[in-house]
Length: 194
Image (cartoon, rainbow, N blue to C red):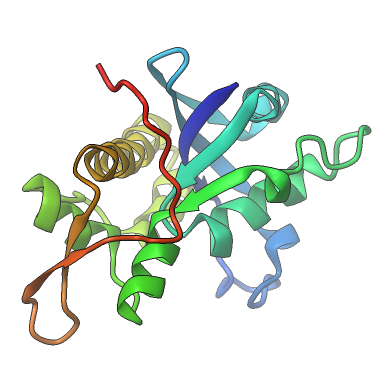
């Protein structure tokens, strides 16, 4: 079984006309960026390739992301539920590692992927998530894929770092002071990284 690190981008957002908050079924995926540990490969697939996305997720026992429980999984699962097999794969039954959820449980507050990446990896994102629908509407699909895969790389690097050292440095809200944070709920298997 595989471990996948992933991120999705959408063509629209909750604040767009006709969507509404928490209406995950109204969100349309533009791209899905994925890193497969088994394949040691990054790929980015478009909405028209959702069957291939589902096949990758079907072969995974663990999925990893940043804020996936609140956004990526509900949106992606809505797509998978439309397949004639009905909801295969079921992402809610996968072992899920949501780094933002772990940080929030450990610190009591949410923080951006950009700030966590800067604190631990020395660099962060180039764009904001709100720019993804604009890139899609402008037809800048290659730029959109590059943006999505950058988020996947940052998330994977943070996950690998946590697996190596057992903690992440997280800036405190308000002060920015770095705090060493462990995630007791996160069972990280001993895996050879290289």
